[in-house]
Image (cartoon, rainbow over the protein chains, first blue to last red):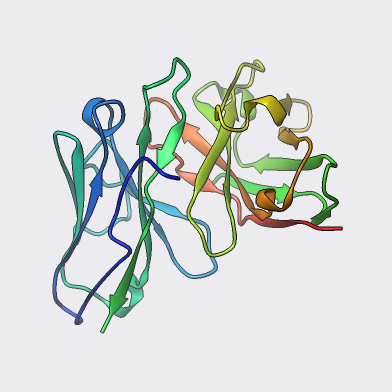
Amino acid sequence: QSVLTQPPSVSAAPGQTVTISCSGSSSNIGNNYISWFQQLPGTAPKVLIYDNNKRPSGIPDRFSGSKSGTSATLGITGLQTGDEADYYCGTWDSSLSDGPYVFGTGTKVTVL
Amino acid sequence: QVQLQESGPGLVKPSQTLSLTCTVSGDSITSGDYYWSWIRQPPGKGLEWIGYIFFIGSTTYNPSLKSRLTMSVDTSKNQFSLKLTSVTAADTAVYYCARDSYLGIPFDSWGQGTLVTVSS
């Protein structure tokens, strides 16, 4: 059972904006950088956002990340059919000395 | 461009040991800039971080799997491996290997994943 909670699903029409929340605690989101991953059907995850709000080369600026306290948010603007995927947040959990990396519960984005 | 490829049996019997290898091309495991990680995903479920190994052999494991887990690295073959003992049906998952930069982009490269089914 993941310690990072995300909504199971979000949906919107093409061109619109969706936001995905990721809720944690002081031992994970509150004191560590967060990343966001996109998993298209049948493929391996791909990092979209790291260090809370940085985008790797090649990731369009339609994707954005933010963090406040023990929560984080992924935003997708100008939604496209190709954005239909599962999205996961992830960060280190410092509750143990060798805290595990933890992923969120995952959110399915549907483009209507 | 770095590529990672998982290999190993797709079917393991309950109570036996699951063994997988990840072959890295396009980068050297000994470059020292990365942790080499394993992540799994049960069918229809979310991601679970298993652990990572550094090229000198130091490891960090998920506490939930630590008692059954061993990771190793073969620098001569540019490979790293995973052994998970006493498997049950709950260990059925797609297993991914991934490169994790501790100074840069986490999990920036992934293998395609390999499905391991635990069944008699």
